[in-house]
Image 1 (cartoon, rainbow, N blue to C red):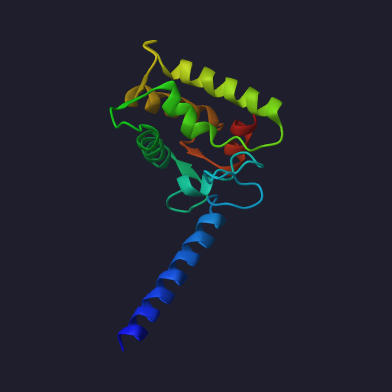
Image 2: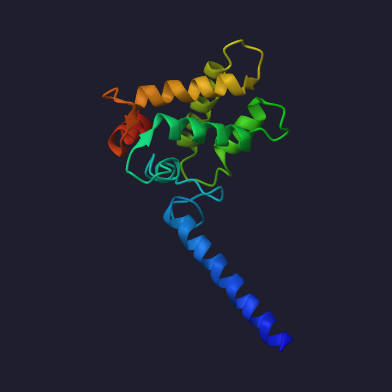
Length: 163
């Protein structure tokens, strides 16, 4: 009887794991063509994170959803949990494993991200506080909100990502 229970538990856990992987891949996370090991979509800017940020799944990202996502991203980046991001912490999470083919584009993206870190570091102390990070995220949300209605549609999102 114990063996049957163990087998049933193992099958249930395996099924749950596979369902989780399938769901993660559906929403822009996980491995496969077009994805990096960190779960970020590499071809098709903007599509990978939009459904994750759109928590209520209504097809738009509200200011609240964007702010919540920014807090979560900051917490994930802050490896030493000191409420500040170093350039290394920021680039490690933001840049991923760099397995792409276009090294010139990768270098350009790295330069853009380095510049963005510098822009967020408003007091120029070489670290980005949570307040600075949130302010930067708010500015990017407001820039993406083309019609200034407090929501970002997939069209606005993609337009901002491609610029």
